[in-house]
Image 1 (cartoon, helix red, strand yellow):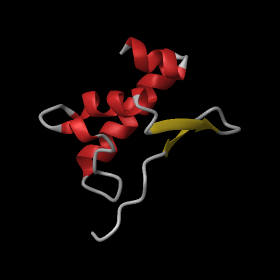
Image 2 (cartoon, helix red, strand yellow; image 1 turned 45 degrees about the vertical axis):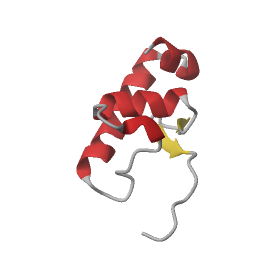
Image 3 (cartoon, helix red, strand yellow; image 1 turned 120 degrees about the horizontal axis):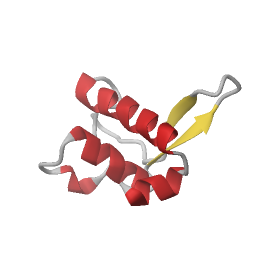
Length: 79
């Protein structure tokens, strides 16, 4: 978690990013696939933290002070 916090800088933003990404991963929607190869038997929160650490996911703060998740992974082909 320390590595992810170093990437984001603010613990409150990190908690928001991880919780939003966990919801995406567990919802089964379009962004529900892990962006890391080592997902194996990791939980959704661990996968989200690993995505932040490996720069696969970041955030953009909008004017209202809320964060928006931005994935930086390559687009997948041939679903």
